[in-house]
Every structure is written in structure tokens, then in C-alpha cells.
Length: 170
Image (cartoon, rainbow, N blue to C red):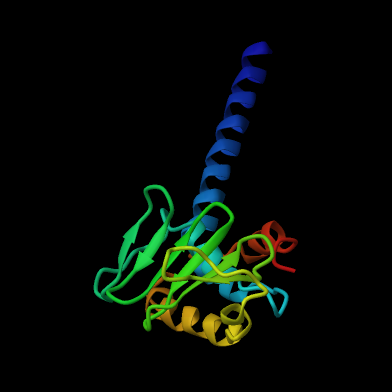
């Protein structure tokens, strides 16, 4: 009797472990697909944040002229642009050389890069003159070739992805 219970427990534990690994891998590998279809607040932009968070697991196409580094702070970059994640923010350098900083928590614009490597304060003229919606559109167009080459999941776990990230992006 003890032997049968032990075998049942071992089988259930194995199934749970394998299932959990599959689910986590699926959610990470297909983050782009799920993030595009996830309901979110109008002022939130889940795709750039989630792409950088899960960059290790996403397919990284080489034929679009982008390079990727996931060592310390994940970054996607081309000759003229980059998008990089730090602990509390993401930074975007546009094709014209301007640098913008966004909070990872609130998704709010928090500064423009200056010549000496610092970021402006909200009270400064450069900060107030930025068209934040245009910057988000530039980020979206920068990520578009990368996003287009991401695969679709064979098993769709959109409901689980939404449940996991809904509070963060609403």
C-alpha cells in the first residue's frame, strides 16, 4: 500500500513539475504574441517592457540588422537606435540621437538624455517639449521588425498570461 502511494505521489509530482516547466517556457517564449493581445490601459505599453524582460527566451532574428545582449541589462540595438532595460526603467535612443527614459512601474516619461549623460528634470524646458506619444510610436516602429518574426504558440495560454500581467498593465 505504501509503495502504491509513493508511486502515485512520484507520478503526480513529475506531472506537476513537467507541466509547470512547460507553462513557464510557453509564457516566456511567446511573450510577444500574448502581450500584443493582452488588454491594458491606454497609457501603458506592455510590449517594450515585456520584450526586454523575456529577451533571453525570445527568438532573436539576425536578418533585420539588430543585435542583442542579455548579459546584465537586456538591450536590442541597431546602428542608430537602441532599447535597453534597467532595474527601474527602460531607455530608448532614437534614430536622431535623442535619449528618453521611462519608468518600469508607471510607464511614465521620466527624462530626456543630456550631453553630459544625465537626464532632465520634469521642470526643465527639454522635458516639457517632448511629444511622448511620438516617442512611443518610434519605439513601436523600432520593435516592429523584431515583433513580426516572433512565432505563434502551439498551445495558446493567453488567459494565463492575461491573469499574470493584468494588474501590472491596467
